Figure 1: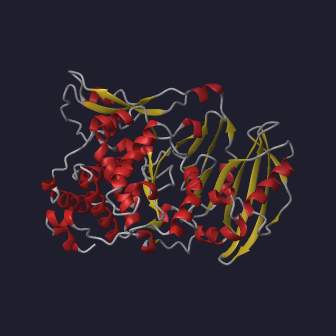
Figure 2: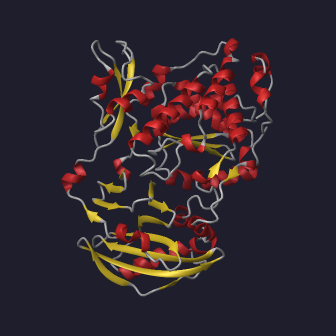
Figure 3: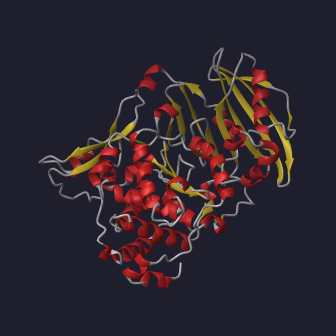
Length: 486
């Protein structure tokens, strides 16, 4: 965005669009976005339904109505994802996604409106046409991407194992340019101000993301999650927040002051944060599923993305996926079915003989094959477990030719059954909106949170407080506490 745009008068900013925006979305983009919608939802843990999802949709449509797009109520679709990562993104065609985890950082409805407006702005300004793509040609991930069409195929399983390597290209490798982020900020601020919301919500939201990213770096760095945070795919800096504050100030005369904190907190109360135990829980390098009664640990240096149907593991040496399928008691047929799903019948992978072993008392079967791609030789391994008479699980691993299971040896050997007591101990973390009572302090409320470490820092970050902040009796704060399994 041209720097001069930040120095327009408030009247000019409000009276005329600063950026070219699409009057109507391209039919081809709409069709493609609609086609990919369910795969994206599945990869991000499924879509929320009910009152909160309806609330997010209503706020999104209210903001999108300011975008200048024809029939915005039909053109834009807003989905709340049951995902434990702080993320929001949009795709050409009018589909906007926001995670429950990101909502947990927000203080009020105006901040929610800004995030939805920012993502709507990316669509309206047609940023996807010129989005910058990070190069990964020298990594194994580019090799895997090259076999999406040939080895993986166009099928639901292939869509998951190839997540981000082509098509939408994993959000961690797709970054908007800095100027596009500033443009989307500008549009988001414009939209919310015209909808009646306090435009300073833009800077307070960006500040919340900065705080969260800094705290996360202190707690565990980037370990345990491969899906990108909104703070990393949308580059944050003091300069960006400062420019948001400067631009928001130019709308001061518009009289837009709505924050709707109480209405937002009412919707946020009870929302899950971090992992949903019904989909398994990622703790560092370990994945535990209390309902399936299983656990495994990935190698150091790898990250996990926990989807509704599979767990994706990736790192520089390769990529893997843990999932399940139909099982009729024949493990050889099961492995063959996995291979058929992987290739989609579109490519031949010469697999070695099926071998048998035992992992922590669980019968296991494995085989490795090799295929030639335009980017080099890739080893494909299937490691399957006979869990019961009616249930089997498996890993599929993709590595550079000659490595076989290589970097994933420890992972495939770590799968184990967990006890009923271990399973029962896993409970969801949820947000509880609490009214401050006389005598409450940051420290006393933080001691009630469902974390073993960084309690004060987590509570303070979540509520935009300092450790020495004085709490006002009668005000509302967010606590993360343990909920119950239903």
